Image 1 (spheres, helix red, strand yellow):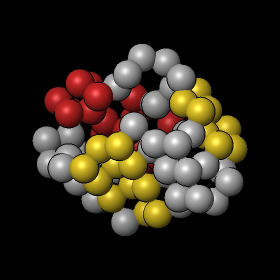
Image 2: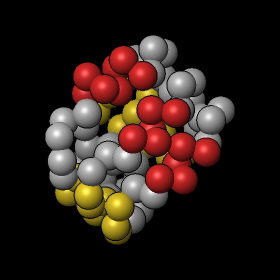
Image 3: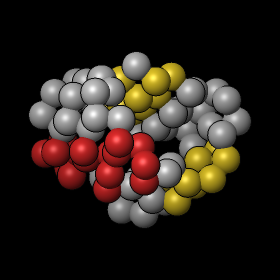
Length: 78
């Protein structure tokens, strides 16, 4: 579990996030993250929780892509 919510993080979500392959919960909500949701998040196939809402993320809505790539995902907040 990685909970960095509400930490005033600024900038893009780094593509290196995809290296955390055993992560089951990623909470980056309530920050100041920008840019698109990196494709590397789709490598986190054990994720059951992904909260990245309340940021300034841009780009296409990744909901369908994430749901297909992350079969265990139960909670998704964009």
